Amino acid sequence: METDIENLKKRILYRSQYRGTREMDKLLHSFVLKYINKIDESQLLNLEKFLDIDDEDLYKFYNNLNSNLSFDDEDILKLFKNFKLNQ
Image (tube, rainbow, N blue to C red):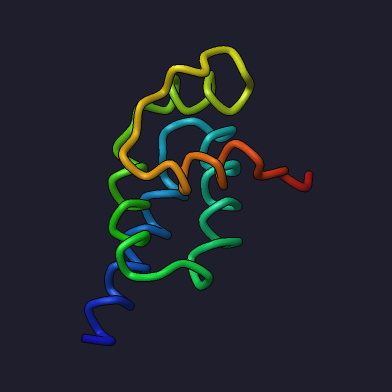
């Protein structure tokens, strides 16, 4: 079971780092690095689903250009919305 969680974390880390745009690569990878070891298995699965959301939609949500993003896990949305990228 531990191996499954570690594989899930590896997938999430990879997907967060290779999004297609540098800005979202940096933002999402930093976000994932901060929280990946702090959330439980259920939230990890939701985080993986969260990464399925289009970059443009995530960018707009993060930058308060669209607050209507719908996602099943409100905790993940709140963590992302409140995340501050240290540049």
